[in-house]
Length: 401
Image (cartoon, rainbow, N blue to C red; front, side):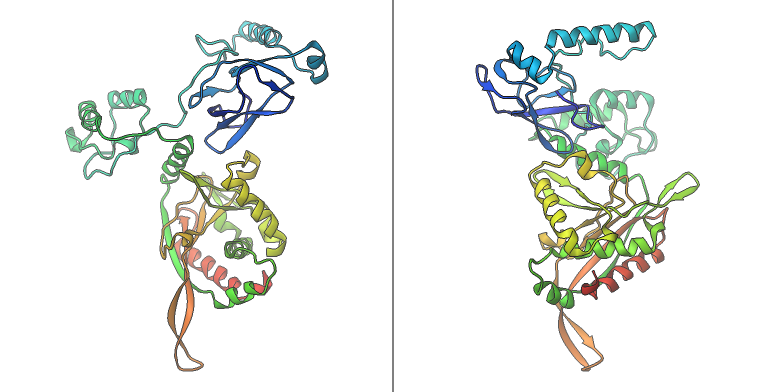
């Protein structure tokens, strides 16, 4: 199992594209794996014949585990510069012996570095409905039992506590688990677990949401004359980045007693995929026009829907735009990622009567709602409102974007 990203320690086997006895070429994609970020391929290091497959589909394996072996000729090994499993294991053993002499231990107990070792996903959780009672305090005994089960504090919110002040006890938890043991259940995917973990961490902050209407008629008319027509979300991305470049502290991070402002306005785009959401990031959006961003935007959306994003495509965003209007929603309170302070949501456009002072009557317009969720520690409602107003002003002049 190769290292698929800086923060990725394991991946789940989705599919084998070869069988024992098949002939393969160097750099041929033979295994499809899923991480908590994307689905990607594992390729061969050299050409040869598949001798054995040691891993199983649907199981997670740690980085460094052998998933199978390829029998190759001496000429192929020399051409590709690949060492054998035995030679690589010997090098690893020698390096480990040197580390142990320095009293640095890193080998997993009971498992050789190259043995195929199945691992549990590193983000666990029990999906349960919200409860009405409970207490924030978790006793050491309760915490130990939750750690054994891989549960987070949010996972026990459905459990009614019988302890002092409504505290949930170990006995309460065991009774609840017994109670739901016969309910229909399925394993959460790595993507679903990653989203759950991100939202759990994000909700540790005081988040607030403000909204403002956007009359879209001028934007829709201008867009209809473009060839090709950029996505409406792209105009919002561009206006959001420009507004943030004027008020950079709004996208800052509160670190101790300092607010650290971003160096570049890289804006993420929420893309719905099967069982989750992926957020590719467009770089330096404030310095590029909508037309200049159009191709990059389309490529990232396609990669996200195909689950082919790399860590380079998703890291470093300072804020995100999400178009929940594609689902027909007219209001929502989106939640920013843990590493971001802001997320801007776009609702569905609807026809509404709006009073016109010029003709002194109501006229029909297409109106959408913009919802901005923000970390209230960093900015207040007034600053969030001014930021949102500036976004609306910029979108009212789409030719400048």
